[in-house]
Length: 276
Image 1: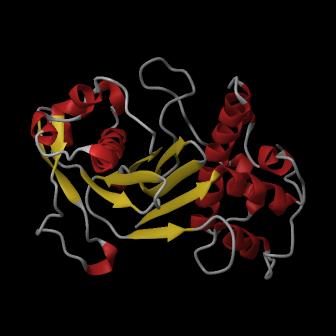
Image 2: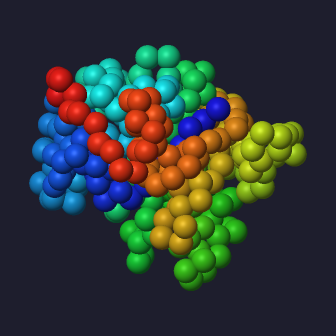
């Protein structure tokens, strides 16, 4: 099972504040660790600081919700982001016995957790007004360039293809060190994949010079009209989609408060963690 959370930056930060009964991002900051706060503080623009903090917090809250842990456990989760190449703390997130991935763009954050064998990867991209010159040569396989439509539909298709490829490269573990134009994804879902358990829509890598991508699969995530999003994994899997706040069984804030021993998560806050 892959657990996905797509939410706005504002909703994630507001939920963090609400859970601790604080305001202006103080609750959100208290629910991550020092490394996460440092990563957010290192950004020059306020929007980037908020987006970084929201992405780090979303992963922690989703993990606690999936594992049935209270919100007070969020800042103490051990999330290792050591880069495989340079050793700096900006690599893919690693949690004990879990596969995890995060992405953010504009006002959106996307987080995923699954079993360690899933090797999950995600990407979300808000649609821009235009793409940079040379995008097709860098991002699209020669066969993909021949079929992309023109106009706005072409821009949407390009961004959707980009998110699928970046999610796949995150899943494999190489990120953008491997050029996206070097492989292509099947345009239709594989007939070999059963639709039972919500596993329909998964597409394999159809052609690649990298043998590491031979087993990787991807499917789209509904991000509405403003963005494209994708998830990738070692094999097709059922997906459980979570919401950040509100009512229902798949609400992160509700799951956290139930684990804390509170039944009406919409009205109550919890105490701040002892160590932040």
